[in-house]
Length: 258
Image (cartoon, one colour):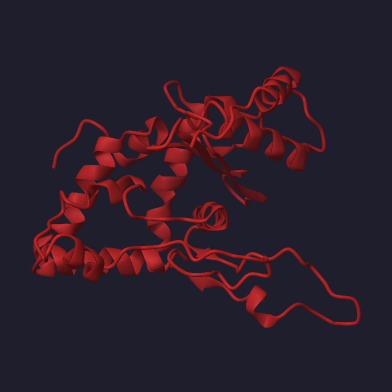
């Protein structure tokens, strides 16, 4: 499909339609023989990012998340489904379930251009020389590192270019990269999400914030993530107005609407 938007611009401006077309093109790619075969390939790539299973971290109560398989849709639609049936997966909605830890890990994967270390809280244990070996091993995704460059550039543009949805996350000289998200919620106000890492090159922090019923990604999750990044990278907060905004937001936080 031809599009006036390219991948970088689509990420910077959160253009859902672009990703819907790309997802459809993947599933309908003639090289796979059928939409279901294309879906199987797509799912393998998604799983290589650590989705649909525990990451084997040292966090208590870590969730699996969920990546639907072909059998799930065969049961639901009596084996009669196509790319349009599952199109909402292209923007991370529908039946796809991701834990906050998996999303933070995704930020690290993009920052690292294609690999991650198993997330962990504990850095060292008294009386032991090192942590378990699993925390030192690189886990590579099925995507070649070169294909992460336009993703990184799009996330950088989202913060630094006019029209980007992550402009509030700008920090002078720190080359912050970000991606806002708004998760539709059938039981009340939408959920607000923000994915970020900084600096663009030689990154030092990757972060994901998810605010239930927070509305747009830029309105709740982004300010929280940005203040955390600023404090982590500079040991200070130089945006008192944004801090006040977050304080007021939490004070006036709406009750969870069931």
